[in-house]
Structures are given as structure tokens and as C-alpha cells.
Image (cartoon, rainbow, N blue to C red; front, top):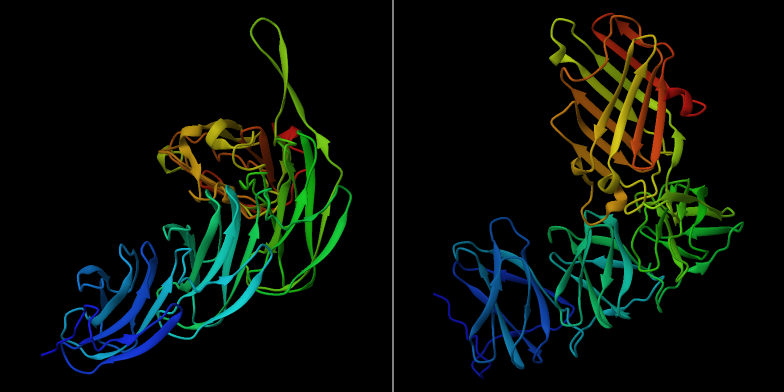
Length: 505
């Protein structure tokens, strides 16, 4: 039998706990409860975590207001906004009240209120941290202006920790988070709490946390960089980002390049418009268009896996302007800046064509390119297939086939719903069933069925492939010394990029 007092009275046997504490506990008897007390003001939001540290216990908790009325509970971690001021009681117990064991209990305040114990963090900070207890949370406070967009990165640096973060608005309402790097736009001005924890609240270890502002707002700490300028930089901690501010006229196309100069760093970059929306990026060299001159653009430089440190060099080449002319009904013309477009020859990792003269439904097409030059201008540009669709052209004069497959915009979607700059995916019932486009990383195409246009009666080398994504085309030519079985298959590997895309069309 177990008895505890959960109201704020003189009979209570509670242990005190305060913001930022992670306390170990033991339930030595079946059915035992432990109680803890903390002081809170009206409207404050707390995050509570109870996590078992021995094998059989499932650590759960219930929260009681000063009068002893249960207001919330969970097994693991959860948040609760408190309606009245006073002393609250946390009761920790086994989920089934039938196991014994040890646990850790953690408490932090995630609202921007009097009892918040978060460490201040500002643009450009990278802090090392340590989660020494199971279920422990660290909190950081960022003072934001209205409509600022920030990039937050956490990366484990020791132990078995999977470093994750969650951000809360000034009232303590969760805005989500990530394990690694992600951007968040903060709607209102005020203090935001960033809570760092292990992915499963089961491991301990060390981590780094980085914050930079990627919108052109008051707290942006980016270093100005001009066209033709070369800047040397260093990322000294895991997860660290450096930012640079780029300005120009609407329609300018700015060529950007990052190169590693020391260490194990793989220097990459991501480009953000004045409101902090990502325009994509690559590891190496590519170009981005400026859609407006009403604000600065932010260039964020980072390691590709946010795991390595080292030195890098970033450079901006002189901009150019791309203008397209559109004729509208009545004969008048309008000139519009069109970000993106152009042609880009790519190297090809592998092309597989399969055929069966007796059963065309067994035809297959497979294509892989790992060329970093695969760099569309990004979401909402003229290269965006979710807006403008695309097509795949496969041609061989010696093989006697020339087929263009429509890839309509309805079949495309972003690979990452929350970050469209990560690439796109196309799916359909055929003949082209899958296309995956990851800028700067890889292109994958799959096709199947009798509607595929290739035949393999004759050796088709070279086979030209042109992928159109909106206004941008990427071309490959697969020849060399392929594996060819007449009427059955054609496999070509490690194709060099063609001199241009024109001959293939």
C-alpha cells in the first residue's frame, strides 16, 4: 500500500525540483509513488520528462495543481500550461504499478516567463552542451523580432546521444523542431525557448547547438560579401554555420562557390531570400537568381553532414541578368525576370535498358547520375517541376528509338514537405514510374512496361537522355564500352558529360 499527498499542504512529503534540474529516483516497492514540488506562476508552461533507467519500470507522471486536482500526465515527456499560480506536485509511478526500478525526472519551463532558466543564445552562437541524465533537457532562449526566420542545428559530439531540438513560442506553444538542422519562421516578437534532448530520451552525451538568422531582419548577423569577393572561413564546431549577406538588383544571377581548404569539412551552402525562404543550395558551385532588391539574401555555409570541422573558401562571381520576353494577346510584350533555366550536361553513373521482343511489358529503364552539377534553381523558380512539370527524352539513332515521356506537374512533390529545397520526387503508373531529384547529389529514374519506347534489336550506343525540369534541361550520353545482349539488355556505366545538350535533342 502506498500513500502520498498531492495537494500543497503541510502533510506533503514532496522533494523540491526546479527548472533545469534532472533528479534520479527509485521506486523500491510495487505500487510506490514519489512526489516532487515546484513553484509556478499563472500561464507558465512546463516540460516534464520521466524516464526509466532500469529494465522493467515504465516511468510515468501525473501533475496536480495546488489544490491537488490532477491537471495532466504522461509516460515520458510532455508539456502543460498551468492555469493557476502556486506549488504544483509531480507524482512519479510505474505505468502498471507492478514493477520497481530507477528513473530520472526532468523539469524545464518553456514559456518566456519568470521561472524560465534557459541560457541566452543569439545569431551566430554555437554552444557545446551535455545531457548527463536520462531524459534530461537543456533550454536556450532566443529573443526574436516579428517574422524572423532562424536556422537551428543540433549535432551530437559524444556518447550515444541523438541530439534533437524543439522550439516554443513566448507562451510555451511548441512550433516543432528537428534532429539536426531546420528553419523556423517566428511570427511574433518575444523570447522563444529551444529545448535540446535525446531523440528517445534514453541516451546521454555531448552536443553542439548553432543558431543563425536567415531572414533579412534586425538580428541577422551575416557578414556582407560582394560580387567578385573571396572570403576564407572556418567551422570549428560540429553543426556550426556561417552566414553571409548578398545584395543586388532584381534579376541578377549570382554565381556562388564553396571549397574546402583544410580539415574533413565538406563545404556546402544554402541560399535564402529576404524573408528567409530557402532557395536551395549545393556542395560546390551553382548560381541563384535574385527576385527582388528590397532586401538582402542570406548565404549559409555548413558541413554537408554537420559532423565535421575545417576551413573553407566562399566566393561570389559577378552577376548576370536573365530576361525572357513574353507576347501577350493583342501583340504587346512584357519582360519578366525568370530565375533558373538553361542547360547542364551531367555525368552518368548507370543506364539500364531491358527489352523482350515477345513481351514488351517486360521492358525496363533505369538511370542514375551522381553529378553535383545537378543544381536546379529551387522551389518557386522556373525550374520547379511542381509548378511547370517536366519531361524525359531518350534517344538513339543507331537503336532506332526516339521517345519523349511527359512528366506532368501533378505527379511531382517535394522530397521534404517542410523544406522543398531538398529536391523533388515524381511518381506515376508509367511508363516512367519514379524520378528522384536531389540537387547536388543524385538523379534516379525508373520506368517499366510496354509503353517504353526503346527496342534492343541493334546496339543503341550512344543513348542520349535529356531530363527537363521546367525551364532547365539536364543531359547525359551513355556510350563507351557497355554490356549489350541483343533483344535483352543494354547496360552502360560511368558516362562522361557530353559537350552540350543540343546534339542529343
